[in-house]
Length: 181
Image (tube, rainbow, N blue to C red; front, top):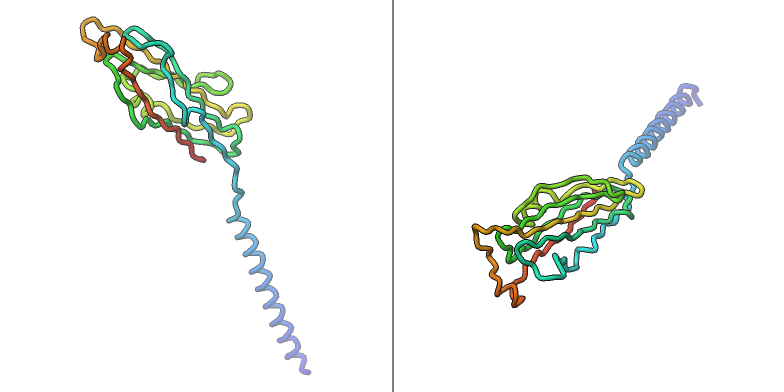
C-alpha cells in the first residue's frame, strides 16, 4: 500500500475521532447546564379552611380584639412567596378598624401596619411577603388587631336591638396563597 494512502486514511480517522470527541464533550456540557435540581417545597396555613372568630363574646361599639393567621413553610427547600386575599367581607359596621403585625418564627416584628377601615384594604396593601429558606425561621405569624370605635356624632350601622338578638354577623372569607420563588 502506498504510504500517502495510509497517511490519508489515518488522518481521516483522526479527524473523525476529534469531531466525535468534541461533540461528546459539548453535549455533556450542554446537558449539565440545562439540568436543574427540583427542590421540595411545602406551604401550609391552618387558617385556609377554618373560621376566624373575632371574639367569643358579642361585638359592640367599643370592643376590640385580635386573631392570628399562621403561614408555615418549614418543610421547604426553596423560598415561598405568600399573599392573603379577601374573597368576601360582609356586614362591616362603620368605625370598625383593622391593623396588623407580621412576626417571624423568632418573634421579631417584620412589619407593623396603619389602621384600615376594612380587612380587604389591609390585606391588599400589607398581607403578603416572602419567606426565605432559613433554618428555624420559616413561619410567619400575622396578628390582626381589630377595634370597633365609638363615635357619638354618627350612628353605627348596627343598632343595639340587632346586636342583642344575635342577628348580625360580620364575615370575612380569606384565602392564603403560596408559591415557590
